[in-house]
Length: 130
Image (cartoon, rainbow, N blue to C red; front, side):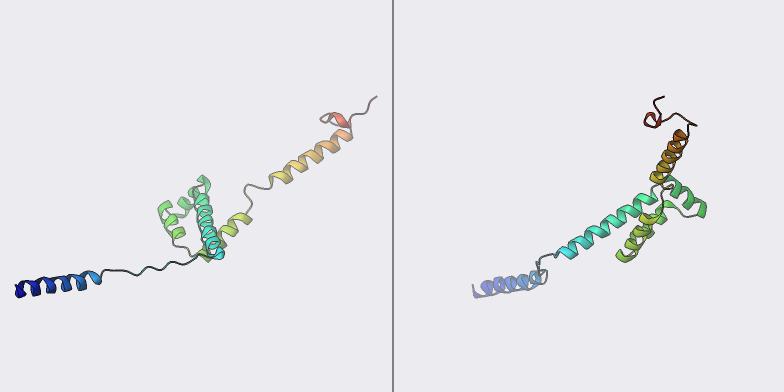
């Protein structure tokens, strides 16, 4: 009987030591606002760069240079947060097909001047009541 109890005890101790090595420690901590904002900004930068890569003219230019779309996306995914922020900032600063508002204002001013001079009749508020 003692031999059987000893065997059960040894098996239990071996099992405890064996499974005790598999336990993991867990730590919980508060996430600061700066860390949450940095993570959000990094995700937005990656999304902005990926959206720029999906544009057809960009894809055509990349193919012209001999870069596959999958290779470009892999390189974008490998960018550090600082590199992605720099690239996303450059995307924001580049003109997208020109300044549309400036062109509209220029057209409006040209039409207004020609209408005041009597060369065109575009705007009714510039006509005299003769």
